[in-house]
Image (cartoon, rainbow, N blue to C red; front, side, top):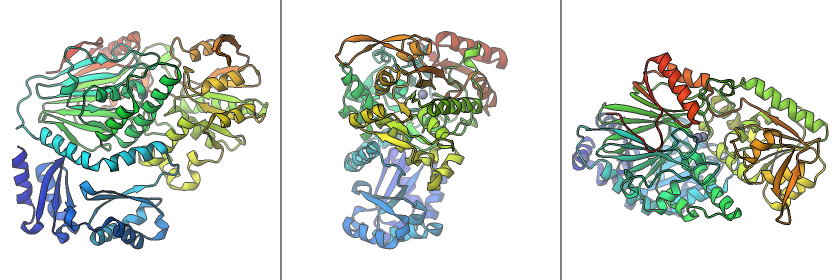
Length: 627
Ligand SMILES: [Zn+2]
Ligand SMILES: [Zn+2]
């Protein structure tokens, strides 16, 4: 199989291309050539070959013809107009590839790609152009450093992986089954094993946000060393928090995700280790394991099709839930079965995202979330515009009264949603403080504007209107700065983690703000049973806390307590049902996970009744055969 494809590539390219190497880098075929003219002008023959072989093909220069790196930097800065504002040029010699990061990437590419073509011609490197983010993030920088530093390792890893994916002739798939290692009849530790005789693929591998319950990785059907791929839907810890653990215990295969998902995964899992340490708990893995995951990461954009095993091919599509969040479409065999895993999704346009994608060509089995699956009122969200109005009103009331507002929030998603609402408020004349991690998460949003909805993208590209760089937002980066915010008498808004008040800087602000009745705490996200957030929300007038001397004391809650529903990143019940109606292909079977038991069952019953389709609410450790 492997050799056959190679032969077909050689045959399809001109004889004088002077090919020095043909290899697979993941699912992409890469041809290294010595012929300079062919490297510069190869579009037509390659396009023909791509449509014939149905594989992605890249042509790169052989290392022997690439120019010296120092000289190349100079050449590029001469060719590209100053106004492009080049930030950085980085090299990956193992791939004969360089990346140019610039404030105005359009000027690096030039009209009809002329400038880029000139760069290719003058440097003989394969250039990639990226937009320099409006806010710099240490995490993004660290990740890029690892990727560039490990280019030798990554080339070998991708070659080996490519050989494995293309090693066998395609044969009939005897059976397909899906196993639930978590997230069945619960919210948390999403971890799903999709298997055929040929492949073992994990969809997500998360933890439970409120405790230390991990997925059932020790189930008899799981052998970490035999997993072929991990596919990550999005970067919330209940979906990604356990991935580094797998690398710690012997997994050395690829981690597929979108680029923002990878970056947010690193940010959140690093923070998870910090929080565990601060609370005197042992984290199940170390930062080294997270770095190892980064070394093995493979980035796919929405709509980009990629073979991940000999009989599985995946495509990510927008899920509308958080930055980079994806539904995963898995195509099994040649047209045999199509499996869609929704992950967490929002079927509504939000301030940040387009509604989730529904135009799958074929879906035989759908696995969907059911966070708001119940038929009672608590699963129906108020309208988004009403929720926004209420939030604005509460904030202004408090500030104009001389009070301070605390908004506990997850670092990713809701916080940026709230920031967009605040940035739109002309009457807002007070500072809004963002704790460090939240700032980093926001920086990652500005790194990938193409993952945001069209309206917000436009605002970010016209730097003046970028909500995230609005001067009202101030970063709180140290304990000293936090102290200053707390001690200041000026009214302000503070957005801080954690969203459910289970640790994080939000607790410090709570202690400082709670006893003044002019202040207000506003919950904008779901508060799980048993969390401090839930207790305050339910109206407890006193809550137990650990005081400065390390002793337990009671903190009186005299501040106003408010909750805003309707800013959720999840579909509410009506949207869940509408989504299934709107799918361009009707699934034959619907599996339901990611919800409290009664909610999952409720949704399953309704969908069965409305659509006359088989619905299943599996239990953890259950296996369901799809073929
Ligand atoms: Zn999520
Ligand atoms: Zn989730």
